[in-house]
Length: 469
Ligand code: 5AD
Ligand code: SF4
Image (cartoon, rainbow, N blue to C red):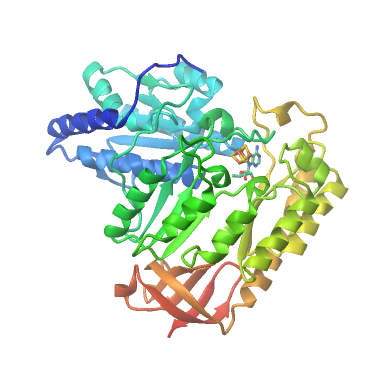
């Protein structure tokens, strides 16, 4: 995947990019240039986009959500499932027309899709209207890539095939002033056989504890009350640090930060969820009452072929331990339907896990074949109609279990951090409980960013309605 660059990246490198940002801002000053960014995929990508937004705004670009009025259009891409890729290529076709009408328009692509050789070759050959392409390892270089594009007038393609040191201290934007994501680690070593992430995000590397804590302290000083610690597999945080530490230890230190109210984290791999972490979660009062614990499939045989390193029984035992320590915890999960070789009986095991655990919500996915992963060449790929039928049955079950779960909140008092004005009814504010449940309640707009007690008066499958107390 491209030629490996031997550049030493440290905070000095961040300083270099900041200098380029200053030069560029002189260049584009008063030009009223606008950018529009579309983000596909997971929280990790969403947070990467916040970093891109931060850099572009510092350069002097103004954000717009309308592609038609933008001078720079960016797509931060995802390749976890095929559909996401198809969408990007479709959009690129449309951008070609837009660029014909507006020749100065710059188009930039980044993110996981760019780390695949086949995609890159296709783009180089068939999508020559793209101006800047970069990958998951060198996002921080965007200012330099933009500068090169301006100076040369030629397409700039910079994809690395592996990571370098972690670059700290770059500007970042937050969607909400009072909550923020914080990367604690990058990459994944697990190689689940269906998943492309380890190939496009590289091996696990953890940020240093002090860098994480300092970032959170700065965020809290800036008004942040809730943070989401991000990593593909947060439970293996710290293993490769010079001074190794566990995620549980990190959690305790984050919990001690004064002024911070809520801590969330994702994603947890069941094979690495330790007793030490369960205890830390139960003891740390700021850790939210929720846990995202993807089980992917209920059949132990399917799990073995997925390379997940746990069985149906050990997953259920883990859930039992978690619930014992935190009886009312909201568990969420990811489930894949139609993994190669999945039989009707295997699928029933998946349904059984859903019934037994009673998730507060679940992300359900139809298996998508990803070239280059071991599962792509496995025999017995499940026919589409069979998968669809199973998927619909699973969705019905998940929805009905979720409705039952939501019903348990009726007449209950919950604590809600209000996030925004309700899109349908401006008299209502929308916020989240510690469990991550969406609540709408009549409240003054000044309460955005504040936590309030709310009594639930109505429950729906995907949200609750209540009254402020
Ligand atoms: N097909 C379908 N779903 C997938 N996921 C990852 N790879 C695939 C794939 N090839 C799902 C998993 C993971 C979530 C982020 O995406 O459930 O937990
Ligand atoms: Fe993909 Fe498995 Fe790593 Fe999650 S743990 S990112 S599913 S390889």
